[in-house]
Image 1: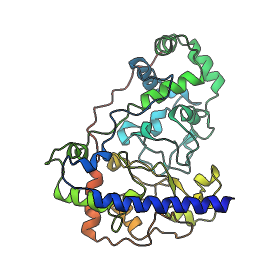
Image 2: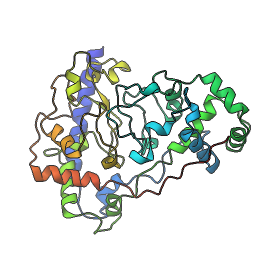
Image 3: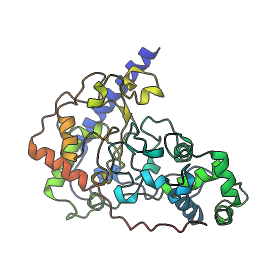
Image 4: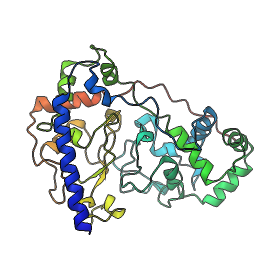
Length: 348
């Protein structure tokens, strides 16, 4: 049965690739053209029933997000690994957790994560609400005793006021903490880039090189980047083994396979958004590449390790130095125009 499912999945990827080819031929690469509207990101991410993002809920979520007292040693917050200083990541190859323990995977940016249909590098969390408490409870990350945390929040007068305003009639518990943090994370949005201005008709928003890079990005016979980095948020919300050097190690990280034990998922990790990508180096789940140019070169040569590669990976892309530079220039045009993040005042 697993073999049948894997073959069917490969077939779906093949069909998707064919659609991408057809879509490319239908695009008109002029500012504001109707054929490019699919790349316009909705104004705000979707949210679940029962957690409408009110001002009060977002404010509470922001306070919780930046409060280091939500960790076992009282020195680590959500913002430690997802800092606005580093593109809402941490600028490290892989994250550091409790006691500065070096972890196995990079801290993914939370930019536009509210638009994603699945969370985490291996997709083990279905939503932002589902994900929010995970790092706090994890011994290798924030490492706090959750019952003790809930007791403290329920005794803190400042937090009691914030929760009663944000979620009147609801208890202070894991559910409301998760909902509040998720509400704040949905405000971390990048959609006001020069590329977006170009999509909306501003002919001067992109340079000729950036438009060329966009064409190469979409062309299945050149960059083929859109095979995985598709749609307005530039992610298919799928999982792919892209042939990183770490996959060739003796006991590699199995990625999505730990959640979905299919051969195709061995060493496969979630496709990250490319929005604000220039601010989130180093790249890949293992933080092994430091520049966007080298990211494109990795794909251009078909990866470092050939075993169990995603069907979306091509063995070799025909890209010269100028074309690689153009793709990088296009990706940098996806950087949004952000307001400064003001730190919240924490309840005493």
